[in-house]
Amino acid sequence: MRTYLDCMVCFVRQGLDASRLLSDDEKVHEQVLREVLKEAATLDLTQTPPVMGQKIHQTIKRVLNNDDPYYEIKRKFTDFALGLEDKLQAKIDASDDKLLAAIKLSIAGNVIDFGVKSTIDEQEILQTIDDALNVDFDNGHIEQFKSHIKRADKILFLADNAGEIVFDKFLLKLMPLDKVTVAVKSQPIINDATIEDAQAAGLTEMVRVIASGSGAPGTVLEQCNREFLEEFDSADMIISKGQGNYETLSDVDRPIWFLLKAKCNVIAQHLNVPVGSFILLPNKGS
Image 1 (cartoon, rainbow, N blue to C red):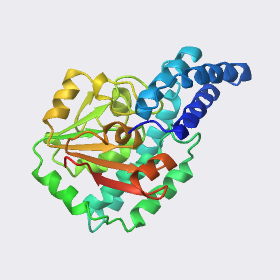
Image 2 (cartoon, rainbow, N blue to C red):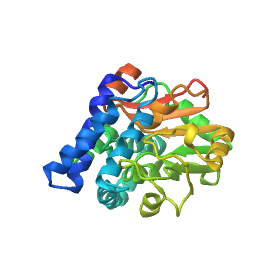
Image 3 (cartoon, rainbow, N blue to C red):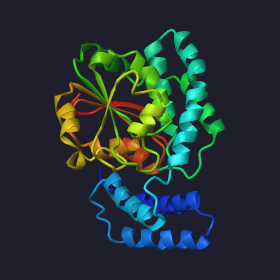
Image 4 (cartoon, rainbow, N blue to C red):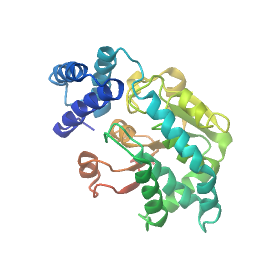
């Protein structure tokens, strides 16, 4: 998926957001914004948004002299999600279709995305959870997804954001964990999950977790390490969370299932759905 003009506006906004996270000095904000605008002017729009976003955030980190501007936000939303874990597990246990409920919660967790929105409050997450559990979510792919899990011998789960990965645990628990590997980012990028975030969420205690080798807000295969690529090439089911992974993998011919919430106009139009839609979609190779 290529980068659209609307993505450029989002990149600039992310620069301003990151600068305001770390400083109250408007001169710092201006410096970051000017450097981001310089970088944005040279971007190749034929590349995917995560490739372009990575370049923008490398500039942001350099100007701010901070390799992880979203560190505190990641810990905050991880702690918040962990505080909901027992309550949400009880809802799944009481559900007539536990796997469907877990799918809904996993997609609901995708709302924790600071690449798309400047601010996310706890009430918005709670409302998204309520909406998810009550939504009539039968798009014709649910049974196919369940069947794929049952017959898969090797499953690769591509995680997205810190905090969100707590919601993914409900889905993972209902899968054959001895057949599952979860991949996270190798370097901090926006609020995407790293190994440290996976440890904080308790994910590393329940399933094998690897780092992809990439520091882009998606899965850029050209940047990924050998361990990840071996898992990617050998998996007979790949579950891809979030918009960034969709943007980088939507044209890849592998057995991929995309789970995300369509949070912006670009993604919604690309998927031909309304903004805010919950997506469970098999790729052409599935």
